[in-house]
Image (cartoon, rainbow, N blue to C red; front, side):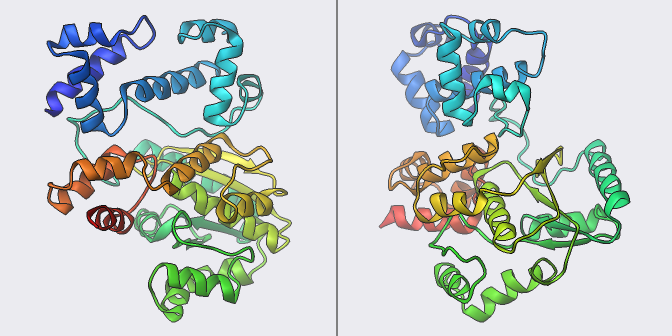
Length: 360
């Protein structure tokens, strides 16, 4: 069945920027339009309409990086009837207008063509990207010497970076949290915060402090001139990133902050300087009040916040997929969820909880 859906994907990609017709797809595939739509959603966990929309918006964002291309031409080329409709769709997706994005390109969550038949490995480091990471690190090390701290998203990234010796002699620590799950409090790493987070993760306060708080002691106690945050582009990473930025504001941090958006599968990396100022308020609005932030945020964080609000719903694309595949062995289902929903960045623990809840 994956072969059939992959053929649909190839057909959709070849007709992405021209007159798409579900009836035409069905005719060329030899199935009814309804069957094509149903099977695509069943296997990929996403509707054809949403897949096409996300792919076109991502390709349009890449086109905006070319200053020679007019925005109105990009809009028409990607199937929009006007520049205004393109701008509305772009802002709804990324939280920023095409004009603003062109003036100041910022990290976006990548949405590449689905490949259901490829290898599904983890941490396959591209040596060219490893060299890029090392070059970025050397540049910052030269400027800040030993007054530099790298914060990595989670123990797995921390151990992989340590194994590859990517941080040189500079300090680095893991942020071992999953802020997209369980309640939180306004004052980050306060006694109340630690207790609530420990309860949510179903661990003792002592274990929470051992796993999450203690590794962050350099961040909590040392005075660094520069902090580099290494986080991915998925929802999981973006809410962790938001929490760290809010904590730095809470502590009155005055040094430089850089966000290195790293692709955990390929280790491609993109650097953005962060200006602190609104993140504590954004943290409270998103993670406590569960509403869109009033301030402008990085497009990739805006995408992460939108996914988070979808994740909070009782019925979302992940739970819908799980309920349709409860007959699968749990380990196989979790592997499929990893593959189909990488933009959420959830771990096996989160998926196991969702599966158990769906069985109730």
